[in-house]
Length: 455
Image (cartoon, rainbow, N blue to C red; front, side, top):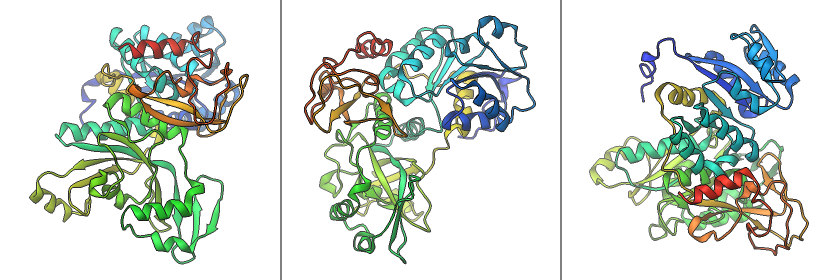
């Protein structure tokens, strides 16, 4: 898309932004970009750590603005219109005259309440918190429609970027076999020294010359050999499955398998891997979402946790031409991989906000609970255990995430409704935690989930 004239008719209109969950990670990268985006103004940020907010605002380009901390509605109303406000209560954000609320807390309870409040006031909502959308997305999209507002996932995070790529393919009439992403970190191998490193920040390295034997892709046996060598780096990651949950619910694509496939692969191999088994690939069905671990050499660019679609090649002569252009096409010439090797977090998100606020683009009222992210016990867990979401990948100790098709999920409880829940029953290894095993009926997010199931 050429963005040159997209917002030309906006005139003096601006998106007035409030960010909930503002000082860390995603929120920080968004704040750093807002001052550079035309037609956009930051009005308020919300965090439990207001002292950090002031420092972050100075770091991200707001040091010359009047910055006021507000404890209540009266203070908000009294603040100058050109000031940037800091609040610690997320319920104050919608009182600040904003047109756009960005929810980035990762907290399902806060996220659903903040989003509902904003949408019912006609304020557009841009959902960064994938945890909230995995549970409440179908209903929040409906609430947006009912109140003539926009609810949207955001560019800069993989789900929206992948949905954009998928929609591009569908608009062209292409058949999408698989849509997916690479997991967040790479496995990087130095062919000269045999040193393997993992880019998760842990500094993990080992000498692994054996990788040479399966460096070049020959078929499924290559994937098996890589997995055997690198198994300790693999396993389902909660954040990955959650992101594919979001894509599934909007596109209708279903999980390739409950734990997703996670082959260890290079981008150049994807068109030979994420294809049907009868064509030499790993898929037992098509029209799926999936994830891979990116393997690369030290002198090769990263996939950057980016996104891909596998499409079917239908006109042989056309694809012969495109193969000559260097596109990633399967060895049997029946499939092509198209990919975005990036997601730039909050740096991209202003575009989503402008599309929503100035063009009304974003909501997916057709969003349905196509798949459910469940938590399956990796060991016996006794009644009385308190389940807690923690860590960088927002996992729950003792549970392995699985992404289940709704039709086969039974009464499995959504993974991100389990935060803080106390088990009423013993859970045996291999069993999912169900809605009968925890008290979640009183949670507002559960109400949204139940209402979404009726759509």
